Amino acid sequence: RILKEGLVGDDVKWLQWKLKECGYLKDAIDGWFGLQTLCAVCGYQLKNDLTVDGLVGTATIKSLKEGKKGY
Image (cartoon, rainbow, N blue to C red; front, side, top):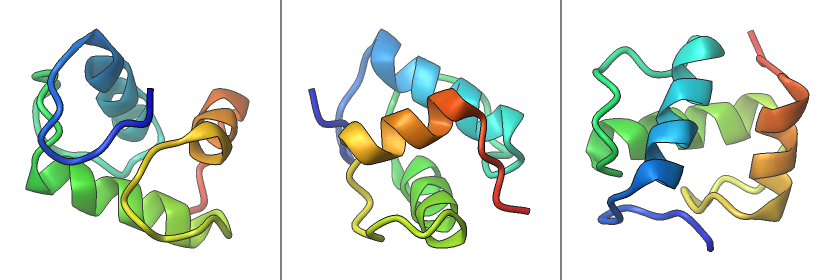
C-alpha cells in the first residue's frame, strides 16, 4: 500500500526505522504516520531526487531499501 499521513501499522514502523537509520527521523518509532514522519519523508524525497509529495510509494520504498541517505 502507499503510505501516507494518518496511517498506522507495521509498514509505517518499517518506514520510520529506515528514515531514522538514514538520519531523517529523530522521533520514536511508533507506527503512526504523523507530522514528524511526513516531514522526514519529504526531506528524504527532496535529497534523493524523488517526487516530494509526502506519499511513500514504489519509488520511495525502493530508494529506502537501497539505503540511500541523501546527506
